[in-house]
Length: 182
Image 1 (cartoon, rainbow, N blue to C red):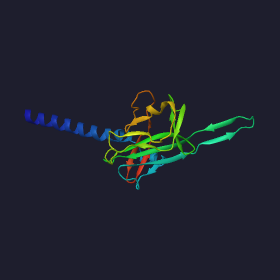
Image 2: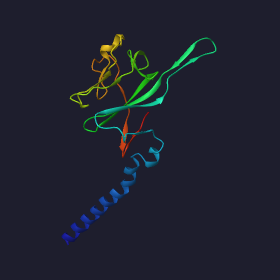
Image 3: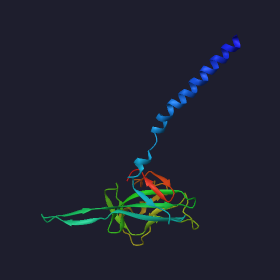
């Protein structure tokens, strides 16, 4: 009789656990991002991007507008810098632009000190690695903060005087990066 009681208690407990798991499944699944919600997110086709390479994706063009009152308005553009290192790890950064150049910060990203036409990661022995720096490679840049325009591949400023690169969260799908925030 005692064994029957233990078997009945064990069976009841086992059914309770299984029922709890099946009851919790819809709630756990609802915590993830649904397939419908990712259809309207920005996507970057990276099928042609090889390891140890990078590309810019222009989102908005910068423009200068003469106003009716004689003043001039300026609006920076936006580009995404997409890097694929030697281990096929992707990094995506949002950067302000002006006339086909990257606008580099003074103390904040909305305070620009200068522009750079040749901006990107350095290669070490032909590879973009975790030790590579993202920097301005223009030769004749006289800006005050030129010596501070160095960021790690993870987007951290090496001198700690300027802001970090604006990293964008993404998910990798077959030949695309799906950005969760742009």
